[in-house]
Length: 313
Image (cartoon, rainbow, N blue to C red; front, side):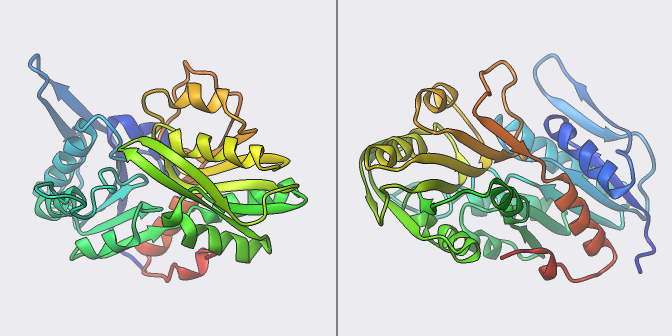
């Protein structure tokens, strides 16, 4: 059993989730604050001793970029304050789409972020539904890659959807869709898309039987919602009875909310790795919390227990 005291802290924009994780674990957030300067510079600090403690810092790195910078600074501060271990809990790992050189003279930013986290002094990373599994290989420290299927599958089963089909919005999501379709004993549909440029989808078609099916589209994130809404409208035009979306990370930038509300999607099921904009029309959204799942994995990691049995697939 672990002997080092555990403490939870959070970056400012992930405090809403960190409070739920700590509460589910049976603890509470530690006392931290951020000093802001007039030029926009800021300085996080721990307002209690963390010497010899296992420190979990919860911070998703969705925009703005200050979220990543704040996490790096908190890791550095914890290391300099003699924490025994520093574990970054990153429910959403930002910059993950930049995991390769897809054209000349561009960075591999996901690798750069991994390097920065390691340089800051983090001992371990916890994250959920990476955009690409191979990003785990960018780290030379342990990475606990958690799957949101643990919250989404029970919800989908509770709906008792007849004539269910599972769809991937593009070829890259085929593996995820296959796992769900196998577990739920539902046929699979793949949407084949051609992009005109970043965030702009050109043509799209479906591979598989669509007519008369209640379709659930799976993806790891929604950004501008161009792909997923175009897929939903295309599937309905091909005779689907209904189309839902299950997406882990609701980035939802630009026209995303308007596109979703104007689309044929009947429901968009997301996790709370990123908070929704409460000023928007959210009547199509269902939010499932990842707090209990993260709290359980944290308890297992802290006490050196295995975690694989916690995953559905």
